[in-house]
Length: 181
Image 1 (spheres, rainbow, N blue to C red):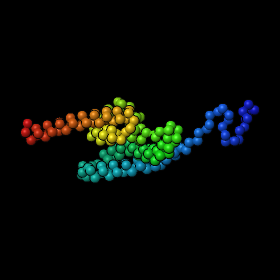
Image 2: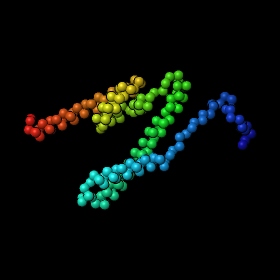
Image 3: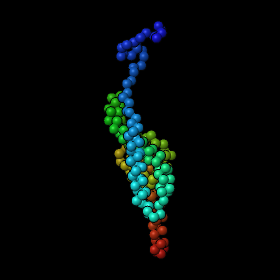
């Protein structure tokens, strides 16, 4: 140690310096993420095995499908564990936010709508139209932040329009197949 920097054994910060922040870090728990992913993989493989006719299913087809499915299942397991850990640590973060800012922290669903860019909201509404209607309606009912409500409204509108168009097309197809039109 050089003489220019005196040794400071105390836990107090140096005068004029920023106080050290001690954050309790959540362990990564890779084993839990892999375990959840493997459970999803096992459930998918059971569904595939019992969903396919046994006389047409070859072992090579199932192995290729399993090899393609495994990375996505492990990724899904990682995402599920992250969401659960984030939700579990939310109470402590909310208390800290209230102490620091003097107002309650935004709810979990508010943060999800706020963090998601508008183009992703529209893309989600196009892809998951029925679910987007439900999540958008839930967001409109629960969210308090202005941007979160706007994103929930966008999700509800895009999902609702796509759902209405799909229902109309299915109705026309059914009516044509019954020779009513």
